[in-house]
Length: 126
Image 1 (cartoon, one colour):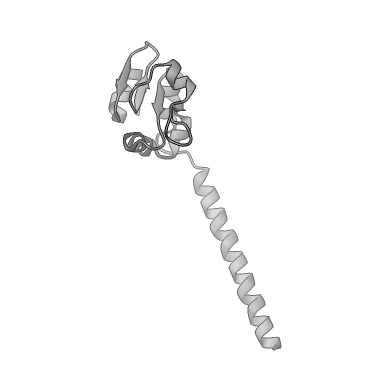
Image 2 (spheres, one colour):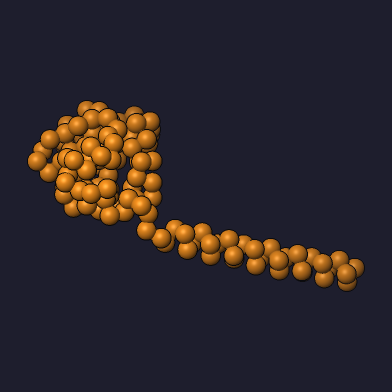
């Protein structure tokens, strides 16, 4: 009985150490700058806005292009949580399709765009 209790304590301790080690590795990796952070920050500073919907496959493709750098993109969610309506900011902007990119000069393009096209339209470097 004592040996079984001791084994459980050892196994529990090893598991706790393993969980802490994994958590530290993940935390360290997520704090590293992503490859497109500067680019995403630049297109936001240049006034580009990405209008999309969570259920839109082309929007999700566009988001995947940025990876974790998407957090720096000026993104406006146009879908209501139930996916059946449009949010007021998107109605006010007359957004009719997703994804829609709007630029500082007022021009718009729809559909997932390459990072190269976004760079050309904003003057930002990838």
